[in-house]
Structure formats: C-alpha cells, structure tokens
Amino acid sequence: MEIGIIGAGASGLMAAVNAAASGIRVRLLEHNDLPGRKILATGNGKCNFTNMNLSPQNYYSKKGSFVSKVIDIFSNIDSINFFKNLGIEPFDKNGYVYPTSQQASSIQQALLYECRRLGAEIINECSINDIMINKYRVESTAKVKDISESKTVIKNTPLKKYNFTLSTNRGSFYFDRLIIAAGLKAAPVTGSDGSILEIIKRLGYKIITPLPALCPLFCENKRFFKKVSGVRVRAELNLFINDKFVFSDIGEVQLTDYGISGIPAFQLARFVSKALSKGEKTELSMNFLYFVKNQKEYFKKRVNMETLEELAMLGNGLLNKKLWLALLSEAKLSPSLKTADLSSGAFNALFHMLVGFKFRVVRTADFDKAQVCCGGVDLSQIEPCSMESRLHKDLYFAGEIMDIDGMCGGYNLQWAWASGYIAGKSAGGALKKV
Image 1 (cartoon, rainbow, N blue to C red):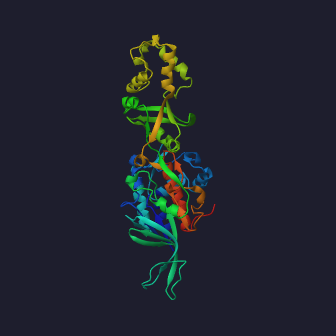
Image 2: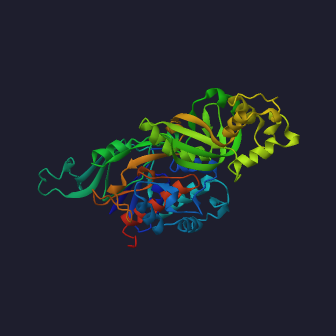
Image 3: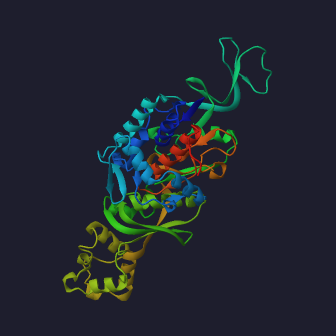
C-alpha cells in the first residue's frame, strides 16, 4: 500500500511522520522547492508551535464540536511531547510555547529529519493538475495506457486498481490512500496559492470561499492615521458590524498610515473579512482607558489635577504624545487650552475619544499579508475523529485546507499538528478509535 500526501507544510509533514511510522510507503508532493517553508515564518521566525491555554474557544468554525473532538485526540500536551521526542525542548512564555532554540527552523528540521528516518519521500516542485478516483494502472511492461474502471479491461494484462491517480507536472502518481494537506491562499510567497481548491471542488466538495484572516486592517480617516503612524499603544479594540457589537480584544495595537495592525487587529480580521464580503458596515473603536473600572471618574480626576493644567499635558504619561495630540485634533480642541476652561461638551467629546474613538474599516490586507485564511473545505464533509472524507473512502484532509481558523498564539499550528496526526495515523491504520 502507498499513501500520498499533497503538501509538505506543517500538517503534511506531521501526517507523513505518523503514516510512515506504520511502515507504509509515504510520498509527499510539495508545490515549493522547500518543504515546511511556511513554518519558518511562524512566530516571527521563533515558531510559537502551540499554546498552554488550549480550548475550542480558540478556534472559529460553524462546527464547534469538530474542534473539540480533534483536540481531545491530540492536545497541546501531545504536541509538546511529540516534539520533545524529536529533540525539541519547549520554552513557555506566558502560555505561548516555542522551541528553546527560539528558531522556527528547529521545528522544520526535526520534521524533515523524522520523515527521512522513517522513509517518507518528499518530491519538491510538484504541482497537482488533477485528482482522479478509481483508476486502473498497468502493472507490467506491456505498452498499454491507463484505462478507467468503466472501460473494458484487456484480457491477460495485469492491472491494479488504485483509489487515486494524481496528474502532476512531474508525471502521474498512484495512491491507495490520499491526504490533502495543501495550504489555502494566505502568504502566497510561501507557496500557498489555493490552486488545489478547484480540483477538490470538481470532486464534488463544498468549498467556503477563503478570505484573509490574521492580517492588518485598512481604515478610513487617513488624516488621523497619517498623524499617528508608527505609534504602538495598548488598547481595547472593539468591532461593530451594522452597529452591533461583535468582538473585542485587548493588546498592543500598531497604528499605521493605512489603519491598524498588531495582534488585536489580527484577532478581529476574520470577522471583518466576512462582514465586508457581504457589504456590511464594519467599524472599530479603541478604548485607551480599558484598564480603569470607573473611566469617567478617572478622567475627571485627571482633568482636575493641578499639575496638568493644559490639555497638551493632560495626556502626558497616559498616551503617546503623537497620539494624544491627534486625538485633541479630532475633538477640535487646542493643546494650549486650560483644563479649567474645558466645557462639559468639550470634556465629553475628549472622553469619548479616549474610550470609544470609532472609525470605519474599508478592507483587510490582501492574502500576501495574511497569516491564515478563514474558509476552505466544508467540515460537514469530513469525519473529525479520522479526518476521512464522508464522500470518498481513503481520502483525508489535514491543516488549513479545512474551514477552520484559530486565534493568534500558536493555535493554527496546533491545528496543523492535531489534524495531521489524526489523518496520518488514520491513513496508516494505526489510530486508536475513541
């Protein structure tokens, strides 16, 4: 028996290791000239490969129970132990788990070495043109072309039926079992172009349109953002779609000349992508006083401090000076205005700037700036405890090709490890039933 794997990224390499461990021949067909390239870019090159705080709430999916079943089979602790067995010593930084080497290449090299050790073959620069199901292949030296199951089999010619025939730029490949672990469209420089989706669709699968997730956001009010470009500020970022609150996150927001970036923006991006694709009004607000319980009382006390008698000084030590002056400008207040002369209307306008400065999002960054996508193969077509297709026996899925995406913090790599482990073990016939 031979197992084929499309994609030698995180999930594909994980699947290969676990399938090959059963002693079965495994071949990975990789679009890139370098397997595991996307791994090298994770965690700013340090590879945050899982998180100690793992739960289904860290993932976005219409089928929450799907995630629960997967991470019950292969958890964050399983990931840590798996890589420790490959020589990767874990380093826990506030729940974010990295290799102690602080090098993403350590994870990539460990997986590649284990593939070689177990005999899994990686064929680079191999592009998939088509996937055909239930084909016969001539198993002798006789010069007879491949024929489909529906055609008459030539008598006395040894033929073997393969479940999957892959047409590629490097010839045809024949597999008894197939794992699709290709990437979607995020970070195309790493080789993820989503080209496999059209092929999967032709096989009869429902595909949720991929959209950028974990990416920067482009906003209106360019005048303001040009003034504050380069500022980093801790804030609570709140998302409103059609004036309804949807999601919030607290952390360091990076202000740019086009809008916002940083982890809080990334966490909201998938909701923004989906809303904008439907033409919905999408707005963000920033709360710079998120750390205070009674925010209005706090601000009143600050206004009444004798040492902060001018508005220019009122924000000193609270916010970056460039940001504070830009907020004063948005509120149409002069920095030289005395705090004692601040009218109730002006006070309220400035307070609003601090706790609910709102602006519209016009678009997300393109796929080239996105770390992952939302969308992919609809989960209703996949068995979570085996990753096997419900449409075709012996066909499995792993990684980001499925319609599931995680938050920042190592959750997407954890999904790659878990789904790759299950797909590999299932294809290899070694997964214990749960």
